[in-house]
Amino acid sequence: MEAVMEYKNYFSVLKAVIFGLLIFMTPGILLAQEGRGIGRLGGVVLDLDGKPIEGAKVTLVFSPNENMKLEATTNKKGEWSFIGLGTGNWNLTVVAKGYLPTEKTVYVSQLSVNPKVTVRLQKGVPEGGGFIEDEASFSFLDKGNQLLNEGKYAEAISAYEQFLAKNPQAYQVKISLADCYRGQKDYERAIAIYNEVLEQAKADALMGREMTAKALAGIGNCYLNQDKIAEAQKFFEESIKNLPNDEILAYNVGEIYFFNQRYDEAISYFELAAKIKPNWPDAYLKLGYVYLNKGELGLASQQFEKFLTLESEGERAATVKEILKAIKKGPLS
Image (cartoon, rainbow, N blue to C red; front, side, top):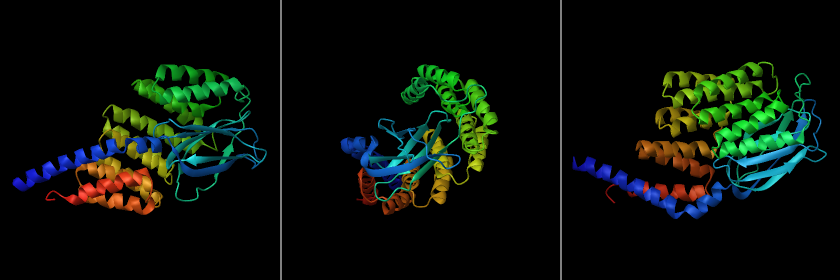
């Protein structure tokens, strides 16, 4: 009994130590979370025929907290680039006159050369006013994204609806619109819009599979928020089936489960992300934190060690090293 109590006390102390580390290292962590660093990312924007698109607006937003936003315009060769980026996932959005906007998640590393990102845009469909001709409509989209990130769902809905009124063929934006209703806990309305995306994605040869996967994951998230676990799992699994080699999608589903404290399900999806992309440090980092929350310190240490083999420097690595020190001290130290 004394040994059990000692272990419980040790684990409580460990949690306090880790919390203290996070507070102590706050300035550095905040800087990293803002997305600042030495990473570089570049790419090209093309049409479906492989021709460069000049003047496309490329927006890059740091995923963890949305606080850092960068913008660039493509040159005559359709090229764009950013410097000074921190490690992590970034949301990349590309819009251009006469084309449907596109959005994707890209991973940036500060320790290695990031692969060139190629984005292909589909021309807007004339029927129903699908061409994106009005520059003002871009501002509605930007405003909606910002408001969504700030949790101002009603205002974001208004901005997205104004954008869609001018660009009805840009159905991809409905994902964000549905996310707003999900944020308001209006799950019925959110699911209805996700289903609209599923229907429209059937005719989209370029982005249909990606939009289908996102919509299915959105529906799964709605059910999970209502504690309808069986229904949620069904849609998450269908989402992964549509993009089985997308580590970001698997990781995001893991994040959803982790946020809802369903650790075993989170582990399965973070492990899938690591299997799809074995050299991606984020999956191992999150696995470490999941096992830490479960109190399985040995497994947490293993995952943190794997993370450090891929990312040995930087604020995240420094935090992990301190956590490992705290774990290795043990209950009898």
